[in-house]
Image (tube, rainbow, N blue to C red; front, top):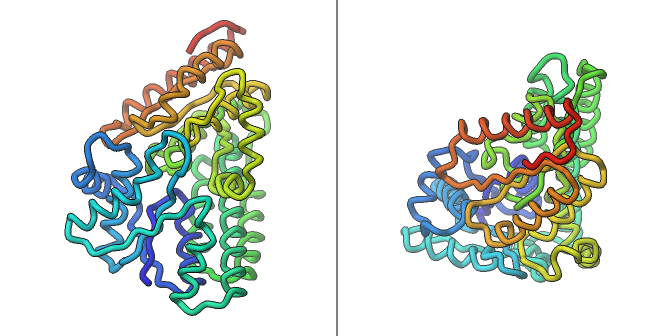
Length: 359
């Protein structure tokens, strides 16, 4: 099997490793770029959301390198259309002349799908368990690196040093397949990060990032929002990451806990990560954050549905809030201008101790 998966921020190296450890050939797409997005948008239905178009563009670059099987996560609840996107994507690619198979992954068939790959590549159950555990270790390390980077960026004295170390670390992780090698890299990287000179007295804003997982965690999609905010003196926090998403998949009581907290604002599921966004906004307001940004694909049904709720909470809790809808037409200049204005608003709010300002 020549497996591929759509780019998902810095997690691509994790998928490459687990595919290879399961005995398959990993054929990952090129890094998401404007050309790939343009090609994906040409083949995709116009009114479908941005992630589908980007995914198609990703798959095209991988297929041209020999990929024949695509792994695609699907949502099986609520109004999110992701639950049938894997079928739409397979249809689009086959009608375009590409003979590929799309394997859907969801909360119910995750382990059967992994077992399917294991059998096709004649890998033992023990090797499969080891591959999955290493996948989780690698994933958590990458997430810890990203969290550390959001703390260091607004405080580092030598601008760009954190991102340079982060990039070098990801390149090293991409080349390893064993836990021992990962542990060695971890020690090296943490040592480098600890040696970064920071301004301990820097006035740093704290902004929470909420929204649809794909647009939140992939810098190629959200125009490197975390990095931009860090350069503006903002420490970015986001709860939504891949480990959290997988944890919710195998621990359904987490959703029960979320629903219980957001009950005064939303009494039912809307699919996607709509409920998570409400829960996270309430959390950030309780922790005294300076503002919250919502990211969503243009036309995303769950995120669009809960946006008025987020605005209501913002007004009730007196926490600045702004929402960005992203698609293939989104311009870098426009996003930068709105972000700078939002950060300036928060700074002025603090400077003049304004409590009732509406963003």
